[in-house]
Image (tube, rainbow, N blue to C red; front, side, top):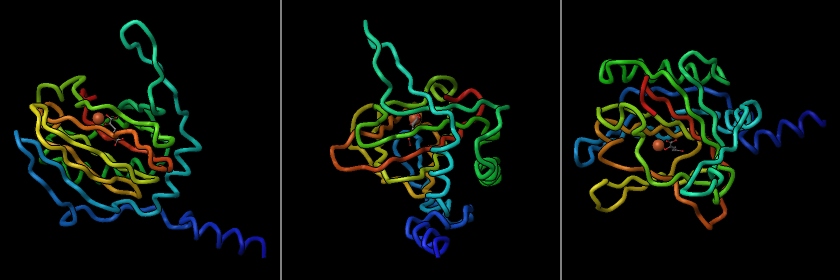
Length: 212
Ligand SMILES: O=C(O)CCC(=O)C(=O)O
Ligand SMILES: [Fe+2]
């Protein structure tokens, strides 16, 4: 009986949904933005997203970082972990995801996705400020950054660097977004803080070599 009860609760929480990746192919929706940038969206690419959230929350050695801001050090408002090119990834589904991204984008990107960055937003106070991924080649060349989101949705905002209205996409529950073309240098993106109740979210960023 206890086992059934646990299984029932797990299913209510969505923890028993099998981890897997849907097709990319025709299910990816591309939006062309100004200045040679584009985004691809594939809602619910990963099924069993709650399972992956729980696994990553438990097994990744999350790091709280402090960064220098002018004359003082401040807490980075999210937990981080970066997996370089040859580091084993914390869950085999991330290897599967990277392979599937390479199969879908390899010809267009001209190189594979190599690194995996993870961000853990504990609640609405965690965030990432407006930025482009311009440390490295993204500041000078077209590239792609693919992000899979698990956990509670949080809005990812995009705005052109020169000014203009921002675009907003709620990302969570296994959604895929790919920022491509000139997006990292002609646009900025952010996950703003929110006063509304927000559960935790983990984002998984796949990037090519030399893009950060
Ligand atoms: O959490 C996200 O979806 C965005 C993270 C991000 O922009 C970054 O790590 O560069
Ligand atoms: Fe970013």
